[in-house]
Image (cartoon, rainbow, N blue to C red; front, side):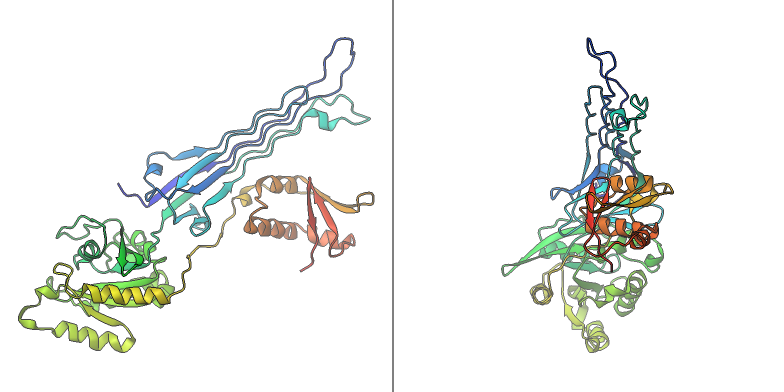
Length: 428
């Protein structure tokens, strides 16, 4: 069964609590604090599995959670890190925050592994809180909570060519004729309820064709299967309109093309900037050699720079010419992956705690910045990610920390230290 969308709930692991304990040894009257730190919570990680082409595994399970970190132990022993949750998805899977619809990650191109949610930091054991005035601290730091977010997974077909057209114009037949795909074909409307993929091997040049399910007017507004169909066209490089040149069901091929273009424009106007070819199918059903519809198609669209190819997906007439034209267009197009930028950062769900301190440490020649909100952000943000690091910088600016550093006299190139992380200051 094919499944191209799923709504699930994800949660990273909670950090283990710090431990409260004191050293106990024979002949030692009062051992000091030796409570260990809690283990870090497990991350939620998505990886691309090239052997998958469906999101079916996410249809029957709604909640996925990484393991919590273990509590710290006595004798200064840290708790074990929580096990990461690794979820495998097909290439082309887009992960969106369910409420806003904003993109968290796009598993396309080089994005084959993404840490979607970081686990909470483990809490510090009571050994860290001993001071000259408090030598027997009876408290430890709790571990940070994990992050929970509801997401929508969408699988967007990655294909070079997208076949579009109303039901029963012969797209599935054409796909089976030119590729190794074997779609189910029958004379019923909407028999294709998911994209069928096939690989064309033409004169040593291979490319992927997707049979995009039949469209109807109003699809861009969600009628029929609406966006479930249209989303698959975004990543294609060439669009092939397949029309019924014999008008076997009384449809007007020219009106059909304009109707589909209208839906594509309403969904995403950039789609219409892609190269377009029209495949006038079912010429084998045109009787008495009457090519009136073909001529009308040429008169209407060739002046717009769109080529018309009369074909028969059943007999094979005109197929080689069509595939050659597609192959030539693809060879001229730059090969680039359409990857959606991250728009939503799960870290924003963290409840921000007020208060921070900025001070200069003469001994180490660094600026020290501390505060509960900063500590939390560092724990949850993936600083190895360019987007994550940019998000953290924006957080520092919004909190007023950058302005406070400037008031303290910081200069470009100076070092800022935050909970074990060091950054070089740069004033944009």
